[in-house]
Image 1: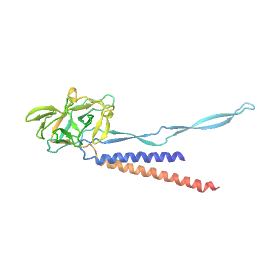
Image 2 (image 1 turned 60 degrees about the vertical axis):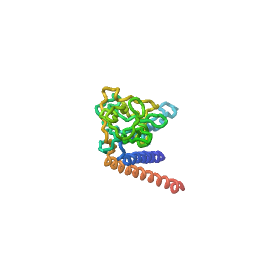
Image 3 (image 1 turned 180 degrees about the horizontal axis):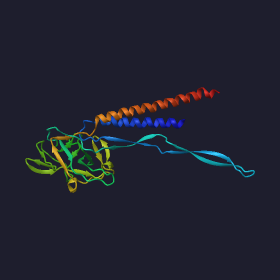
Image 4 (image 1 turned 180 degrees about the vertical axis):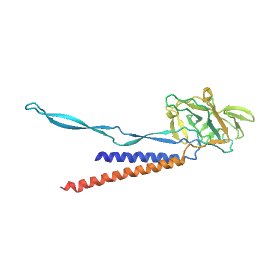
Length: 278
């Protein structure tokens, strides 16, 4: 009976974490460049149950032999194994702001390990010089004249340098070149990840590599095609209707496990307080 407690409680915890993930997805439905998280539920290792029996030996004055017979498998519950971002292109919407830049995927190489295409990112840098990657092109020009994200991360060019601008009177071409008064100043550093599943999600739409390494720039790979659109933003790829449906399913599953746990609790109460008196 105690195994039933553990299985029901594990199911409740898994659905609680799934609900938290779905709530975060819905909360970021309007966040530019946000990539929806998908949960992966997995069962705990299955136990093989066996019954031990004593069989009398047919020999004269023989003793008892211990034998075993298989009963079957027993599952001990589920858990949330991981949350995997879905790097599908979001909708492109026009804002009219010169500091907004949308990164539109073109033809990208297919990763042979995952059978999925890679992904492109803007390269940004925090005040400590650490590299981060984002799909959020909602930029601004800070008081010092650098192109930054709204969180204060510096946007880098293809040479790894911060982009200095006097104001927001600049143009971004389709290939990422930054023009001031019609003259090319630099080019946005668009990074390419062959397997974005290996990136670590930090929050605020930022990703980093495992170990702090640097992703290669997309311009150096002739198989990578992309387009930049100034005055546009990439929206999130959250399907709100689907997320709400999955959340209701998670709620119902949580309640079902809760009722099973309550039923076990009543049975234990009866066993202790009533049957135990006899």
